[in-house]
Image (cartoon, rainbow, N blue to C red; front, side, top):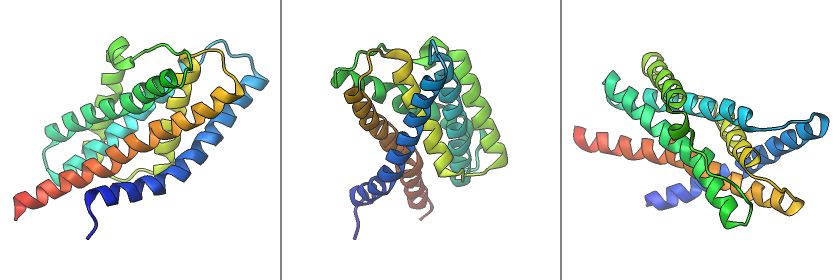
Length: 202
């Protein structure tokens, strides 16, 4: 009988190749953009993809929780806070810690604190919309690409002095930053919540 850890490891193995491919494609897109056009700052781009990640994550999370517990307010609030926590971990905390540990100079900026109105606003819109339309499935590859771009753009926006070695390290950092929170948010939490509901109904 498979344990929860076996299940998680299996999901991580399945997610990692696709996430790595998405990261390579996203990084190539950013480098191509740098090559053909002079960009002074990636901060505005980060503030597009990070809120977008929060929006779609909140939409799916609230719909998922409403599926298991028919309470709109509970679903909206749960979807809102889970999306902000998971999004902040994936798009900010992991890229920052990974870059710092691997010697890539980077500054720390958390949109949930620096721009709470924007993050709470898009999260609330996504969570409310998700609880209303009740669609728990969202194309996973779109979710991964949005998350990958947000994580990458955070590093490019707030760090300097890139080299080919640092680009390889960024590839590793971004893959880990996306695959672990995505598995946590999309797989582990729903499974735990589903098991809790099953135990209550027995």
